[in-house]
Image (cartoon, rainbow, N blue to C red; front, top):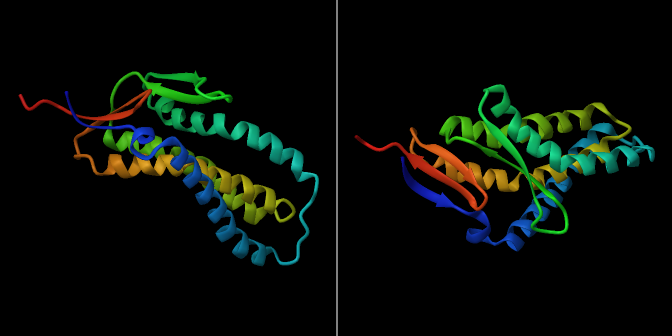
Length: 180
């Protein structure tokens, strides 16, 4: 296989810019979601007991996000290796597929946390009237986390139809089979 293109978002955009944009996306998504959902719930008061759930959910949100990336690979019986990186003061959870993935599988793996975490959280914010503020905060934070996923999706989507995607510590490579 030949490498069609290599992407390293940290080099392309810079880690500080990615963090700032993720925070902006999280804040903007909370503002845009809070108004219609609070209007839907009316004058319902938020319960203070939801703060414990909120703190626990924030702690488990990053590992759960990574697990949701790995879950489609586990279901498809693809070999996957979880990893913990210690580049900063906090451990970063990540995963590596042991083989290149087809473009459509890679797109699904990248979008899996949005489908499996964000959409149920948005539904829960409508259903749970007493705790909708906390659920919306968690959903908005997760939307901010998925900002980098959508940067990956934009790059993978541009790849040729028969391409394969291989993730690495530095980013990912889009591979094309040799024309023999």
